[in-house]
Amino acid sequence: MKEIKGFFQYYKKGDDDILEEALSNVSYEKGKVKIRDEEIKVEKKKDSLGVFLANIPYAILGEGELHWDLPEKVTKVQGDALKLVEIGGLNEVATLETYLIMEMALRSLYTQWIGEVAVIKYKQKKVKVKNTDYRKLKLYLLKKGWSKYKVKINNEAFPYSQGSLLAWAESFMDEKTSLAFRLSINVRNLLAHGEVEWNLYPTRSSIESASFASWLLFQRLQKSK
Image (cartoon, rainbow, N blue to C red; front, side, top):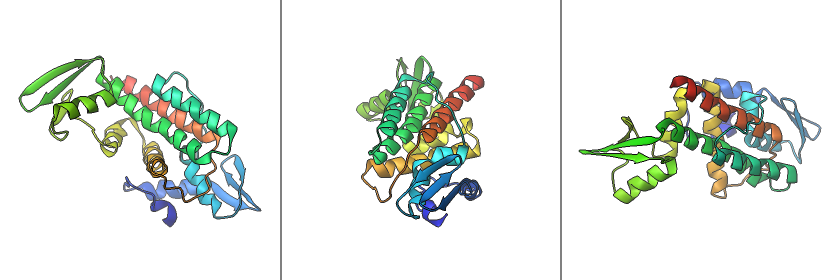
């Protein structure tokens, strides 16, 4: 528990109980780590941490299923993650791609929330931008030189940073889903910066859980409209 809490970039009250429950699904015996229904051969007992860190969605949320009716940017990453897991040998990259599914889902979720027209307000200015997305909005504000802290999109503060985007998406998540996304993206950030200190063992089950959790966000968004 202590080692895993060291990876938290976005910690919330109540995470400890959920994390403890998830860790109860992980055990080591005779060179193998069991995580829920998956049994993974490892080099040493301390690799149990690497198994957990590479399979956070599966450990926390349980069994999922692949969804291909997600936005194109999400399914592309999902397909890449599946190929990497099937090929094997590129475990750090496969783990990063798995968690990129979840990050791209958040970005795409915001894009769908915007709709066809984004109404941007900055001080006394009001601009309507059609057919935009999260990435393009960030670039638009950067080019304009407008303070990200003073901009509102469709009458709400713009979630410019990764942390604020996670916070924005909380309304479409339960507590377990929130922790799965936050911790997965924490690990994804470390891997993206070359911080590879563990032997990682990603599985297809984790991709399925990440896909299903992402899909549920879009279902909840549709119901909220």
